[in-house]
Length: 199
Image 1 (cartoon, rainbow, N blue to C red):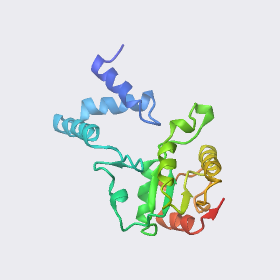
Image 2: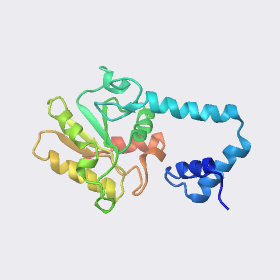
Image 3: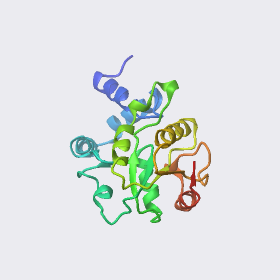
Image 4: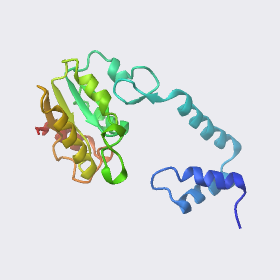
């Protein structure tokens, strides 16, 4: 027996989320049908439409935003000489919560992962190199995650910048190897920023 087409379509759509398999997406779809009223469903649909219509990547740094450029890039009181390079826009939030870093960011929107067919041209590297040509950036802090893909990406960026006068540092290991920045608390991130080192 198959579910009606609309439910099957919702199940397949929900499977696009990471970590959501067939059973979980089926449970979410059936919960939506059986437990949510029309007002709740309309609220969810409206939220998705707002994201589709209003949210985009900042053309300067790659952060998610609803204004061009994003609030961080347009804030002239921030240190314009330092850029922290992160994998995803979500990594900016815990950095900002520390209130200790006042520079700029660059979001790669991924990492280099040859085993997954993701190369340097598939992430937001060209825009980073373009930003570094204006000679105002003195330090690039590599804050990719401490896993194989993050380390590969950090090493690749370091190699690209070796011939420049830019100081290249890496966040310290206050964040455990294999851990993700988005799950780290403010103290851990503060220690990682304070302990960054030249690579």
